[in-house]
Figure (cartoon, rainbow, N blue to C red):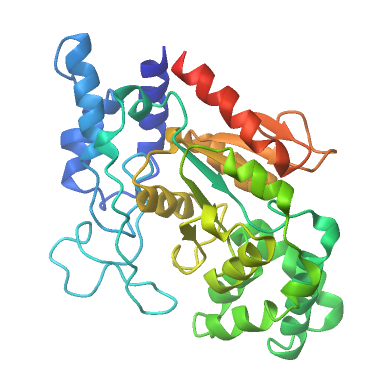
Length: 331
């Protein structure tokens, strides 16, 4: 049953790849795993084909895993755009290399989408309570930027931000779409110039919660790395998150765009079925769930019942939930 679900999800996700841009491995490895061409016979052989499809993904750090097949702009003159470093369209810089995690060392049951292997956490309003006022201060700075630097009339700011969030996920992504020459670094520096240390405190309860989680953890945020590190340091939990995937890593293609999740999976050396995402944003959870991730809605008591597969009133229940999921997957 799990294998058939994996085949169905992979087959539907393959259709996202634009025509004329499909790499050769899509027809030689991924298609058999998705059931698009006759695979080798036998139950064990089928599992090996499926595992090989996940292993034979592009080596490019900007390439999305084979389950997503969404790519960004290759470097000029690249012989193969799917096996060369890709340049961020906004900053012009190359992305850093993948982590050293060897996915093929994981048990086959995990590679086929059973027990979770990675705990992925959103940052703002997920690791800390919205009542602390940090995100409210950042939001106010975003409004100021639109008025002072983008010359948007104050009365139009709320509607413009709602439109950008609906279409692009963040205000920054919308601004870059409208003006590719925008200085994204200056924007991020301006909006994150808030008193982190005054609004956040060391959270001993959060430290205890994260210490109980035995699987690797990562931060997945539409903010930048500098802001993420400040938040983690103020909370006293930076030691739990060696991997931070920020908006620069995603090429300024923010959540909930599927390409952003592909960058996350490539950085972790994982497939979506191995990840559990803790989020406070419903659109971000919807994309994650469509890709095959386990989803956990943090907070938002008034959200619809089907907003996510699991719900927590706050982040402090994460360890207990992950233990239940790991036990269910291994059983």
